[in-house]
Structure formats: structure tokens, C-alpha cells
Image 1 (cartoon, rainbow, N blue to C red):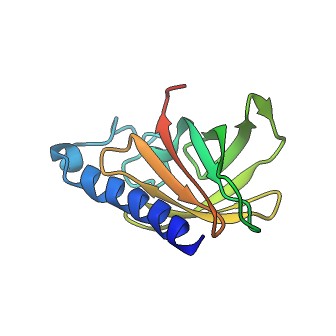
Image 2: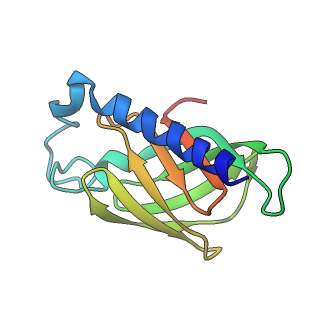
Length: 143
């Protein structure tokens, strides 16, 4: 069980490291329109703005097979998670994101779930871990 969890986290970190080598790392991340907080290059939440879709991998705490769910996070450009869609159903859960460093964020959901986001250097993939056994990799704007 511990080895399986370590393997999942290792694969997740390997994906982040691989993506960090992309040459697009230093490209400008969008428009330079400070009148809109979503377009302000000094707003660390602007890069999160949009729809993020992917798979959530959950391993039951007592053991057992990993469960894979479809998940979507809708994040505005000001650090708010406005809705979460789980297996095609809106959950009613919202949340708040806090910037903790370059491309790293903490979040807390209205369900009191807490976790971490790690954004790849080209702002297209978002990895998150929110318990010892739940993690996901999301892609921006795709289903």
C-alpha cells in the first residue's frame, strides 16, 4: 500500500519535472491588461483561471483497488474555485486557492478538504494531492 502510494506520487512528480524542461517556461502567460485581474501578469491566480478536466485517482484507506473518477474544477482568475464536477455531477462544493510560491498553491474546499496544486511551467497541466491517497492530473480546457 505504501509502495503504491509512493509510486503514484513519484509518477506525478516525474511528470511535473519533465514538463518543467519545456522551452515555453519563459513565455508570457497571457495578455497584459491590468484592468482585468485575470489578465494581470502580477496576479498569481490569473494562470489558474478556466476549466480544468481530468482524472482523480483514489485508493481506499483500508486498501483495495484504486478508483478512477472524472473530475472538473472551475477556477476563476482571482483564486476562487467556483464549482467542481465529479463524474458528470455538480457537487455544490466551492473553494479558495492561496498562492504559496511559483506555480504552487494550497486550496481549501467548502467541504473542509485541503490540498495542494502544482502547475506545470506552461500552465496547461495541474496536479493536485488532497489526501494521502487521492491525487489527480488535470488539463486546462479539455474534456
